[in-house]
Image (cartoon, rainbow, N blue to C red):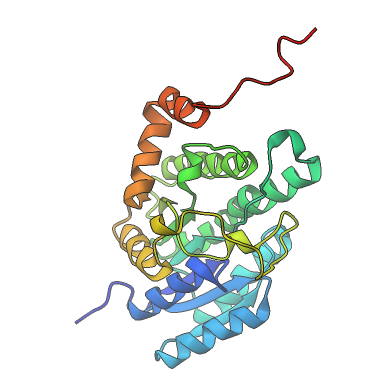
Length: 272
């Protein structure tokens, strides 16, 4: 039986771990040749070994999405190796944590450079090749792009921007044969909590996200691949993610009340 991505070429940024790795393996199981990009070459090689063990073609391409030339070069290497590009997934991203009053300009620039500009440059350099094969572009946003919570304002701002980019691209690409799917996951198993505000991985960092709401990366990848295959414009999951996204978009006052209920006013207010 034919698989949905038989003989197609998929390129995934942030493909060395977490959702990116799970997507790579999932696309391989669907018949694709898969190129994974990221900064940690050892992780990329591990994923390629896993792909090849499944009988799939794999390629590790080092790429720093904050470097436009690096993104352009990565796309060219994928196309030269596999002969074209059918699916590009802009998955690279990380989270700067901290209250807004505590974050520096450098913190903001790192956050936006990776999550927003990196996503835009991935799209820019992939689209010409996707046009040649009526391909699919996917942007990995977040439910945080529809509801913002304390301590992750910079991350939420970046994902709000990714959603805006996806909405614009869906219109700009309409009729071209290329579709853009923007995906908004809820809580998914990943290493995002182990990466600090400077983008450095530290396995000892604790993941404070609610573990009881966490989806395994493999399950998430299946849902994401299905949305990409169906060329959906936007796709939000998990169940809690859908609820949070709905609340953030349609009843933000209720969200604000829930987040502030029981908190005292700033103690400095009212003082003379």
